[in-house]
Image (tube, rainbow, N blue to C red; front, top):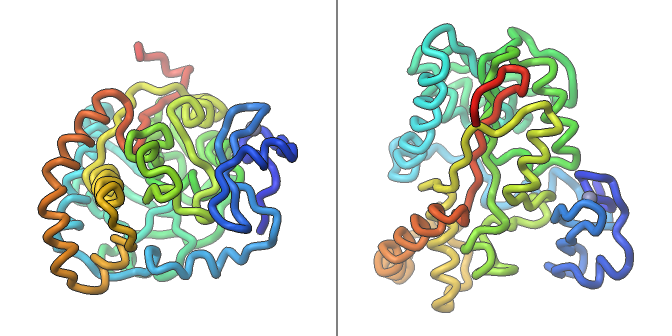
Length: 311
Ligand SMILES: [Zn+2]
């Protein structure tokens, strides 16, 4: 695959745009689209999709009952509660890019009927085996999925990976969401303090796997193109936002390692000590950042314009 034009408006960047971009390596440049303002990863050379996901960060491990897993549960339960608040009963949820099934397992426990879409087989199988979830592993680009329509469609950290995020969400919503349904999207926040402070070494830049680098206005435009409007936006996440800020702070004191790899694979006492030292500061900074819309993630709740509401 290549990415030679803007994923949002299909504009081809000029030589000047490419020169002004943020060069990550010989092959990858982060470009601000002149036509629509969207920030994305440009690469003219063919890149194997399979190869780029061989990265250690994407390795599937069983971390159920770890501290990280508990944080994730805490995080996702807040979303489950938001859905319950709106619909009370007969709730069905489609999680697009359902990963290892953590979010859907909590939906199931809350009594929702659930379905996941996950093209990574190791992840889909994990969700089937450990949480007994129904997961569709076929590649989705359009059309109605089995058991549609759903009360809610959720997608956590997926749209930044797609070369046509607007089209995909619009198709998903048009054919699979109930008329008064809710969509919940979460993506990294390019305008966050942790991103600005870390620059090229921001944890959530994740080039070339992240093609889109969203901010509030670009993610609202994706949601708008699907005929939805935001009803609530939040910016704080323990597992992604806090980890990102911690990595940014570690970077500011000179740490250059891969924090995810190190935490997953080896016990490093100096790193643990450094983390213990910086965690309180990172937490406070990330909480303040979130209050100003500058947290590491954007979580947007949106519903169809036709459904009304007073957001
Ligand atoms: Zn554009």
